[in-house]
Each structure stands twice: as C-alpha cells, then as structure tokens.
Amino acid sequence: MPGDNEREGSIIKDLVKRTRSCRRFQEEPVSEGVLRSLIDLARLSASAANLQPLKYIISCKRHTNDIIFPQLMWAGYLEEWEGPLEEERPSAYIIVLGDRQISESFGCDHGIASQNILLGATSMGLGCCIIGSVNREGLAESMKIPDRFEILHVIALGKPGEKVVIEEMNQDGDIRYWRDGSGIHHVPKRALDDIMVRCGNI
Amino acid sequence: MPGDNEREGSIIKDLVKRTRSCRRFQEEPVSEGVLRSLIDLARLSASAANLQPLKYIISCKRHTNDIIFPQLMWAGYLEEWEGPLEEERPSAYIIVLGDRQISESFGCDHGIASQNILLGATSMGLGCCIIGSVNREGLAESMKIPDRFEILHVIALGKPGEKVVIEEMNQDGDIRYWRDGSGIHHVPKRALDDIMVRCGNI
Image (cartoon, rainbow over all chains, first blue to last red; front, top):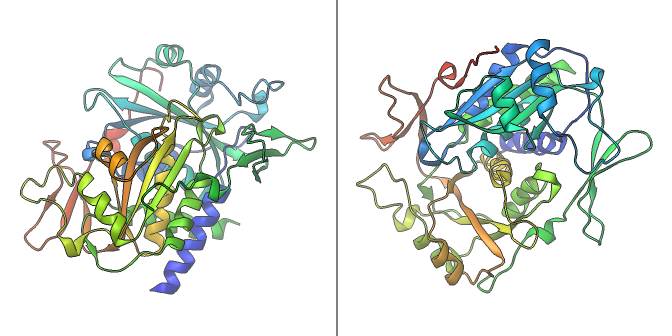
C-alpha cells in the first residue's frame, strides 16, 4: 500500500528529526511501564549473530536517580554549563549493559537498540540523551552492578525542558553545538553531500 | 497532542517489529534517490560528541553490486544455505564507513545511524540486512576505498523476497534462527523479563 508507506515514511522522517539529544528536563515522572515499553522496542532490534547480549537496568525513582546522576558527564562543548540544575534533571534512566556471559564484544548492538528507545521515547513526547561519558567504575559500585555486565552507556529520559534545533554546518567544519541567549540548543550537522563518498568504482 | 503521540507510538512499534533482517530479495531496482534519502536519515542521528565521523558509499548498479556481493558472509546459522541465489540478491548496498581523519573510534554511532536507515527502508517497503561479517580487505581493494576509511559494516537492501517472523525463545536459550519447510525465516528473541536486570539498589 503505497499510501501507507508514504505516511509511515514521513512520520519516521519527522520522528528522526525531532529525536535530538535533550539535556534539560521538566519535573514530571516517567513510569516504570513506559521504560519497559521502550526496552521492549530495544528487544526487537537486530543483533549481531542474533546473540542479544544487551541487558537493561531502569531507574525512575528519586533514590536511584540521585545515585546515577553524579556518575554522568554532560555536554562537553558547553564549558560554562555544569549540567542540569536539580529541577532540570532527568526523571528516569536506562543503563544499557553488555552481558559478558553471552558475548565478549557488543559491536554496535547498543546503538541499534538505543535508537529504537530514543525514537519510541520521542513518539511519547519524551526527550532523551545517550550519555557515553560515564564514570563506569563509580556507577557499577554505587548501583551494585555485577561484574559480569559491561556498562555500555546510559540513556537519560524525561519531559523535555529545552528546545534543540539542527543547523547546517559552517564551512569551517566546526561540529561544536552551542546554546544561544534564549537558551535554545543548536546542533550543526554535516551536509548530505559531505558524508557521501565516491570511490574509484562508482 | 496525546492523540498524535499515540498514533506515532503505534506506528514506530509496528515499524520496529517489521524491521527484520532480510536476506533474500526480489529483482527490483532501488534508486540512488532512495538511498540518498535513507542516508539523510542517518545524517540526522545523534553522534558521540557530535563528531559525525560516519561516511557512506552507495551502490545500486549491477556493476558495483557484483563487486560487493562476494565480499559478504550470509546467515552463519543456516549451514546448508550458501547465500542468496543470483536472482535473490540485494538490489543495493550502503557501505558504512568511519572516517579516521575525523575520529579513531566510532563507538556505536554506526548502530544508531543504521537503525534510522533500516526503519526508513521498512517504511518504504524495502528489506535490509546489516552485514558485519565482511571481507574488509577484499572490499576495500575491489571498491578502491581509500585507507582513511574504516569499513564498519554493509547494509544490503532490496524488495523483500522472504518472510521473517519473531519467535519466543525456548527455555534452552538457543538463539539460532532457522528456516522452515515453506521458506519462512524464524528469529527467536529473549523475553522482556530476561533482559531486565535488577541490581542491589533497585
């Protein structure tokens, strides 16, 4: 049904555009049920050799959120910003783990799975940020995560408290995002023609 | 608008379910324009530190498709199947590269970006397979891919020529997919409760 395809295609394109890294949130809870439904999307992802070595810890209560937050580093390019204020912090987290009893390497499985989570969250009106810059030792210790799990990254979630817009990248190729005077976060992206490679045979 | 969210949520869930690895295709061309629109979805993905080190080579002509195909390994668990017959082969490929002039490591950026491509392709009625088992040296040489690029994986695309269904995993935990007598491909997935970890603090 081409009509259906067209509708789906424009919805997915719109979702992808709106799925931006969000780092400031509103104080509104995210339920365990919502987090489980997002992990159910991750569960259905492709996985190298179908091994499915990813596991997930969820947190949506004050007690565990407060343990996780200090182990995360926020927005390296915003030098004068120390991270979200207490009232801007994420309402929930998904810690994405690799289970070493299943595989020693996780390829890009956690990228595939996390993008399902992010798109699903955007469709629910939530904002997310995949945070790779994590104090892994501190998080494992404070959250009592068993040694068998490798911490791959942490996804922060909540009701968005900031606006994020995509910009065309300048000629100078500067990839650093910035925040303007009214608090809008701008993210430069490379142009399509700059990421297409024509090699000898094409 | 909750109504809109609900509709989007059910569309994304349905798309994720239908986005299965497809390894047999119909003989129908995929245009360069379609491939470019899919890479445009990849372009808008989150990227670690916004570095955007991913680059892409597309192929949708017989000449280059024939160069790429023999460098790919197909469906390790189907021991008696040597890969798609000539008339079942993909109509197009996207070679996902990491540009070492931008970064030495690519994290899971290629997973995030490729899932956007796969979901977009599904919405267009196409089937895809991310193939990580690639003769990288052979592919780089035969496609004359400059040394500066690391081959991360190859996405095969085309009009689906097989049916793929998700199954609940058996108690024995066997993750191998199988093909039944009528050619349907079955993929066991772990149950949601089996991928949720409860650690000491939750």
